[in-house]
Length: 229
Image 1: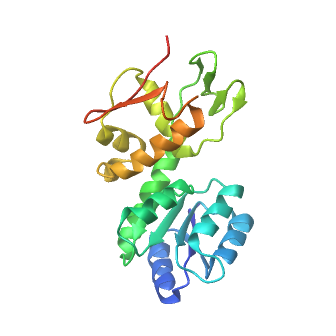
Image 2: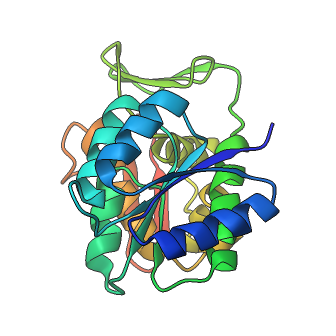
């Protein structure tokens, strides 16, 4: 079946243009004028991906993203008019998977949508359980990470990043190689993404995120996973 894309955008002319382009590319498209309707449509229709504008009436994109993340792990692409890092980092911290700066072409947004969908569908996990130490366990059979036996709530990207580092413990991954492996080659220069997700992952699995035990880094080289002795 064709993937369903929900576009939450109050600029109707732009939304209609995006819908027409995406339908021509084989997608099914739902439209919402604001964040309130967008959250309702996520709950009702369970789309494959959400394109979410930031500046909207009734409920802005930030609040809509926060509420969507409470009920769904659907991939979210944030649309923002700001070109600095503030909106990008804020969106990623709220659980968005990508961002696109407006104004943008329908073709550019379609390429981002296809990249995010490809990344989410292309996840392959080993078939085993790994006991890292007496505290941390990775259950690849259930796609779970456990701390002291309790599941940790990781996003798909956070889980992919962790499993990528675990493929070769002790090996240094450059930022570009991690970005390519986890996000795709289109994201090889998006080092800001990686910093945000490394920080989030450390916050969730490290005993002391400011003095990490598992995910280590070296300035100018990259990141690696250290298995405690």
